[in-house]
Length: 176
Image (cartoon, rainbow, N blue to C red; front, side, top):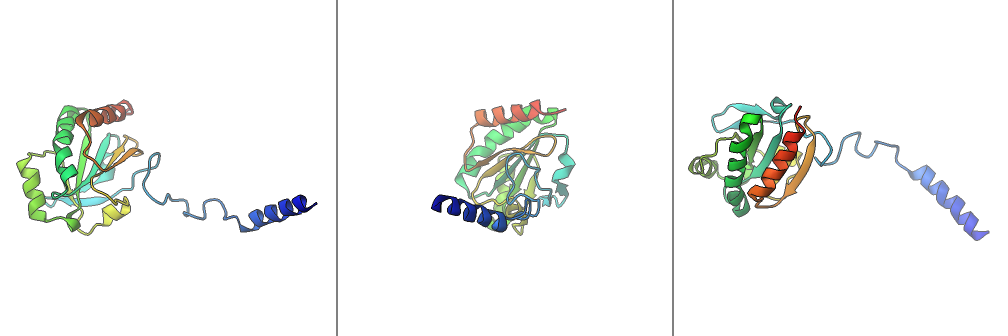
């Protein structure tokens, strides 16, 4: 008898205290994650041109958050450049988001120039895009398919050239 009473009270508790479906995140996800649309953003480049993520819709995209003082960031940049060179003619896009609010702009420019980085270097001067993507560690990389869906998030690094190549090939397979 006691077990039945506990079950009834437990079921009533669950029924009356359950949050309605979708009310906890108001239909949004709490952080960008695999399987969800990558949040759109617009940032300036070194040349002051603006770049918007949604401009790359229809293309596979790697979004890499970095700073010039971050040892793993510095280590993986040559591999990112090499993979970019290999796939850029097939539509592959790299957006290197410098966490400028945590970096020195001059150091970031020097870093990109001395390494001859040819993909867009975007400047997150106030940290809003890093906050939007909930970046808590550098480097953090998002692999986004041509439909704008995040396929993988890699926190930390450095990523090897082989890992980058495999992930980009997987993104390229998703291209229309």
